[in-house]
Amino acid sequence: MRKKIKIILFGLLFLQVGMVIHGCRKSYSPGDWDLLPEKEPEKPQEPDDTPTKSFKVMSLNMNVGTTVANFDAMMELIKEYDPDLLFLRQVDSATTRAGKVDRPGVIAKELHMESYFKKNIDYQTGGFGNAVLSKFPVKEKYSQLLSREDGNTAELRSMAMIKVEVEKGHELYFAGTELDPSVANNRALQVVDLLNATEKLSQPVILVGNLNEQESANGPVLSYLKGSFTFACLGTGCPWNAPKDKPTGVFDYITFKNLDDKLQLSKYGTFSKSANNFLPMTAEFKLKLPK
Image (cartoon, rainbow, N blue to C red):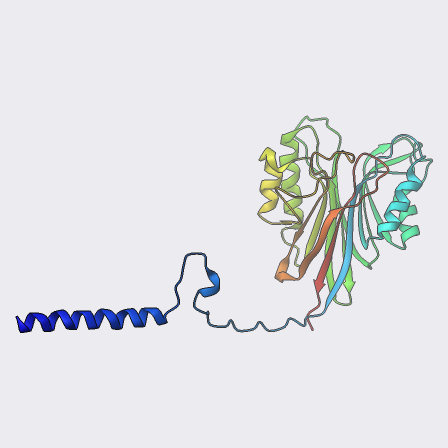
């Protein structure tokens, strides 16, 4: 009996001690993050003091119709954004409907840029195609007509590309294109042309233009490009650029191949003004300049 009483008293003492200890502890509830035990402080990251060079990119549709009335308006909005690298798609050079004006050349002169025009087709007194322009020194120029299915008579498409020296000893490629809007099999062939033309380049590549495919279509163009290029934005929440009053899709993509992590995208979106039905698409980049 006496032994049993001792056991009971010992148990009550143990319980009391346990309650005292428990009362000294904090009470934690799921989601009560302020009371969670403190984590070990993370080691501060070393500051990245690598110098960079910032620059602006613009991609836009230049199809201003059969008159010259709104070409000046188009040129003014380009001057307002003041890109360092500019892609013009559906651009006339010296055609009758353009007043026989070399539009890429005039824009280049106004913005103190160098222009490279790739003619897709002969048209009237001149040509119709794509142009890439740069404020940076142009080191190389390259272009090619893109593939079509055998026997297909769809309008010819092209890619125009330049190699520019952004800073002394630091180069990148800037390319622009517009793929076939109506024949999916042509687009599939054309995106392979783009990949073949850029896969072995050893400097960063910025590829822009109208791919004529929306991500929701799950088509071959975006699927193939995703394997090699980073899209400035893709998916829900990304800005659309046409039709300009109530945009329903992306018709000027900006993508880049970021070799050695040299390119940093710092800004992306549409430009608010346009002389046709397509808002220009713009981006700002930083290029790392290792010492």
